Amino acid sequence: MPDGNSLYGPLDPAPDAGWTSAGPRMGFFTDTSVCIGCKACEVACKEWNAVPESGFDLLGMSYDNTGALTANSWRHVAFVEQPVPAGRRATPPAGAPPDGPSGVGPQFLGMPGTQPPGRGTGAAERTDFRWLMMSDVCKHCTHAACLDVCPTGSLFRTEFGTVVVQEDICNGCGYCISACPYGVIDQRKGDGRAWKCTLCYDRLGAGMTPACAQACPTESIQYGPLDELRDRAAQRVTALHDRGVPEARLYGHDPTDGVGGDGAFFLLLDEPEVYGLPPDPVVTTRDLPRMWRRAGLAALAMTAAAVAAFVGGSS
Image 1: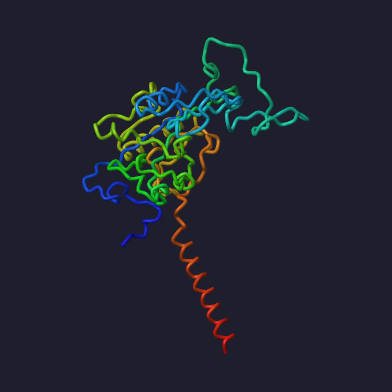
Image 2: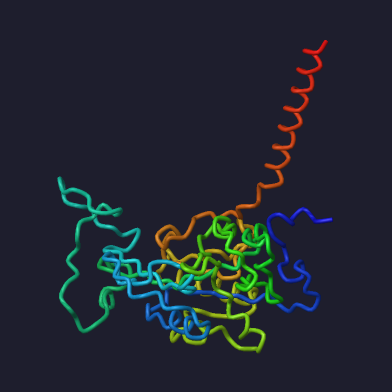
């Protein structure tokens, strides 16, 4: 008899999935404050997992040439260009038309100097251009809707608490794609099957670090037991606040959020929407039991009405 959580994912992922000898849940902590946008993680992921090349896409609006997580990009380094840091935006001159979501026109970035921007004035006085960079990846949710809707068992929970797609079982139905609250899973063109990050399941079984974390030169991507990563992330946020970066925050770390917390969570320097992340993700299968109950009651009511009408008409 399935328990009350069966339609929206397990609470303790690996044990609830049947792994009797599972160790601690493993995951990623991505600290975007030290990401330099080198894309070493993207390259390492493609090389180790034999992910097909995704081409060189000049988007015309960013130095980001990947664009999003896709079936051929399991790691995506986002470049978010901000003319003025959030919370310290300038006011446009009177009568000047707004330009872009910030309402600020093009900014003069200044002439090249001998120091990084803001080094001479400090963070409090910095009003010039900045990049927000983030290496995005599958979140390996605690309540994983993709698992709930997969009709073939192609998606499964590993002994590390992660979520993996078995491409040889996937029938290409696409249910998992619409179920993912983050828009992570994608179908490969010409193939039809679903693909996403496996958190290097084959490497984990051999006691190795995932390829992306191994390749990251700044340790922006950190791998380890999820509880330890959450403690480390909380300390990092406190340190940034003490250094005058009050906008630093964690995303996906809370076990009480709409997906039960993510196995891959982030330290952000702005609102989640700035990075293309949903501000309050909710597992899409959460309301299915209630919906089915209401549909059943409606069907019973319609049946009763039809029977009453038939009996009344025949008499």
